[in-house]
Length: 98
Image (cartoon, rainbow, N blue to C red; front, side):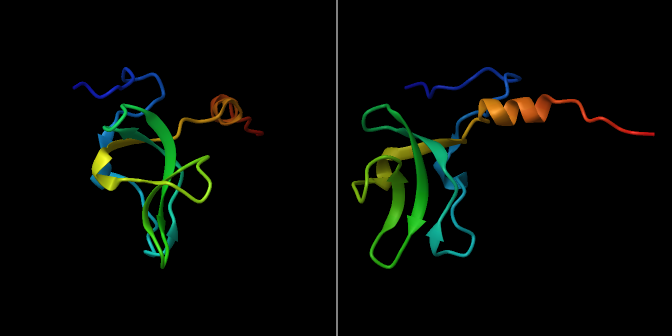
């Protein structure tokens, strides 16, 4: 199976192994929102790592209190793309006064 990816140089990242995905550096709480690829249904989802007393795993956005995504089905991730606002802000030339 081929993992979807964007061509280099278009502002998007390549799919990476899930073992390299960001989690919460302190160990507890939540990590940043990222895109994950599910081997189970070949879907791409927005998710974040959550580590709490009662549960630990990839939490998919929009699914309320559950369900949590089975870790064995998640093998690839990539950072969230910039929003149009972030893209405009990033490409705006910096004015330097002399």
